[in-house]
Length: 298
Image 1 (tube, rainbow, N blue to C red):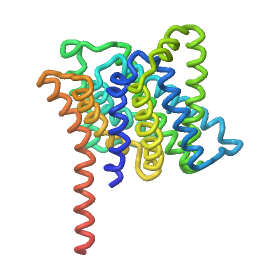
Image 2: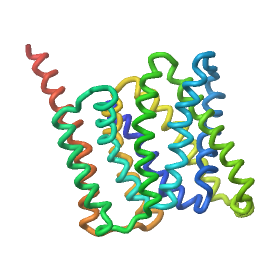
Image 3: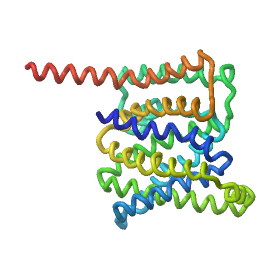
Image 4: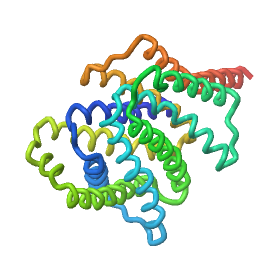
């Protein structure tokens, strides 16, 4: 059940790329990140007020900088430099990096099945993202790799903090602090490049407003609430495998909103990546169901 719940925030996150490109084109990624994080954090603070203890501020600031400020900025760079479909599909590589991180940092070796599916994911990604298959912006690809590492490191930090700090406090204040960092960075950019921000204000439209409401409400307040809550109930690796809904949302929204299309071979590689993400969780669920059935019979 937790895996299915994990698919809800993953699905909304998968819509970020197409929704941003469709409703908020040419907006500065730093500004988009600030507008996504800070209002959502303040909204959650209003819903349920919380205040970190004296010794928690530094830790939450680091988490907000990694998990929100850096990650959100990178996500919007991806949204503006890569096809929506490619961004969504590329993010299913997160389990591979999560397994490596758990192995190297926490000395937790992945199962042979996770290792095999991870290897297959890398193989499919190699053929999909190779220059001979598709031409992609190197800045966007760099942002994707950095964003994946932010997810892995930030998820590990969030899960660790969950035993010491209430999950609602983590959720609320990482958004507020991360949003504040992005807000300051956005202010510096506005001072250096005012014409970009003047253009955003002068051309603000109802479509822009709808995009912001989607990104702030569903993609952030709702999705991050579920994300932090679920991380206290499942492993980081298991949660990242629930991200299967991310590429599905990216593919569907890319087709519907942006008219993106790819070759049959490219779609086959995408499906291959998605299927490999599902294999470990599917077989694990079958194994657990079988063990539960045997226990009842015994």
